[in-house]
Length: 226
Ligand SMILES: Cc1cc2nc3c(=O)[nH]c(=O)nc-3n(C[C@H](O)[C@H](O)[C@H](O)COP(=O)(O)OP(=O)(O)OC[C@H]3O[C@@H](n4cnc5c(N)ncnc54)[C@H](O)[C@@H]3O)c2cc1C
Image (cartoon, rainbow, N blue to C red; front, side):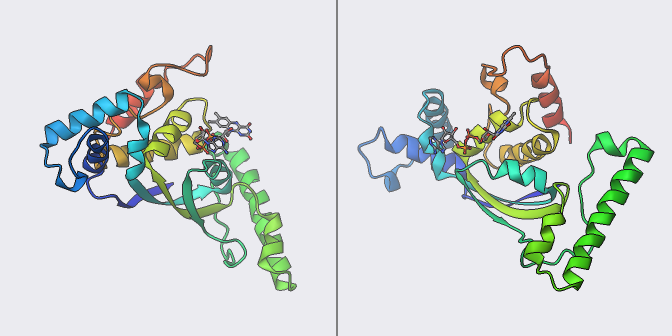
């Protein structure tokens, strides 16, 4: 899995703080000259009050690669975002690229049989294309494991929501891994906005009542790891 923060709103914390201050000011927002400390405090108070729409002014664009179609199928369920994904219609997948879960790779025999089944599927895919079947139909053979890449843009409000759901131990491991990698990147770019970002339990309430986990401690360890 590779994830890069390609581009984001310049100084996201300040932009969202100006938006927060504008709602309480008689001045033209363009003329609001406040110190960093005042801006940050205003933003924190606004977020704590639940006025999360100010977070929609900060956008973050990621390049995501080396992930499975199983992951992207879950990712695109998040509707407040923009996606551009590698096409299986226009791109012929020459070499088999697939993601292997740890539960499979940890056993040599299981891994061998996984690989040989996938290689067989790729042979079949290439055979179909060689027989004149278009890529858009040959891809019906390709599995959930097939590697893919995409560019995705989300605003900070949706990212907070995404992290609440997908950093949670209830989320599937691959999307959780992606969520944590994204969280590290955006925390660096906007430390105030994402101060309490993470699974729901980071900001208090666990919606997965009764599910025994120590995700909070595990997540904090993961974020502090270089
Ligand atoms: C652990 C886990 C297990 C899951 N299991 C399944 C499963 O078995 N089957 C399955 O189908 N899905 C499953 N999902 C996907 C889940 O149901 C959501 O589709 C996905 O998490 C996207 O989140 P979302 O719907 O909150 O909102 P997003 O699309 O991220 O939108 C953000 C918020 O905007 C609002 N919003 C967006 N669109 C609308 C709308 N049309 N109307 C009203 N409000 C809207 C909502 O408040 C929403 O929470 C699972 C997700 C998780 C995290």
